[in-house]
View 1 (cartoon, rainbow over the protein chains, first blue to last red):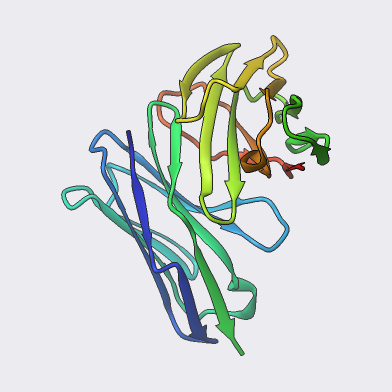
View 2 (cartoon, rainbow over the protein chains, first blue to last red):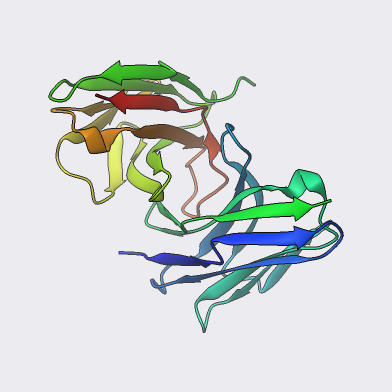
Length: 110
Length: 115
């Protein structure tokens, strides 16, 4: 089955700096790669996603890149703000099954 | 539109008991997925239902089962509860009508504690 690995597990950045989270996946049949943000005590919410026919996607301060050959994708957050502090999960889908990475706890220091 | 709802929100059970959790998807969504979230394991996929049919399942023992009704509401059942089943159980819905996956909308979860 699909195996998604996510690094780092924790990330502390100074406000205004950039944050990068990297994920690798194992199943070449995966074609949809979403990123979810989960704030403490809240439900996961989609922040950005990318499909296999696209190499990069941006939405304001957030961008995702995908390298299908290497089977890895990354989340980039620029100009981090305190409200970016949360747990971020990457995921990959195969056959209606979404496999998640273990999560990255991002802390933005003021 | 109302969001995904889950009942109950909190549940305390003892080992050996069984439990049923309920999930009501967003109106019009026909796909419901279930996940187990624990601090050590993150989000683990349990199963996915579309139009009352299970399309995929994760690597959980047979004690975990689910079903979906004709109105797309879904239930999951855990029999013979073990301490390790203590977790937050999340369901998520998506339209599910296309082959490619789309955004999943999560419910608030049911916090299950097994004593």
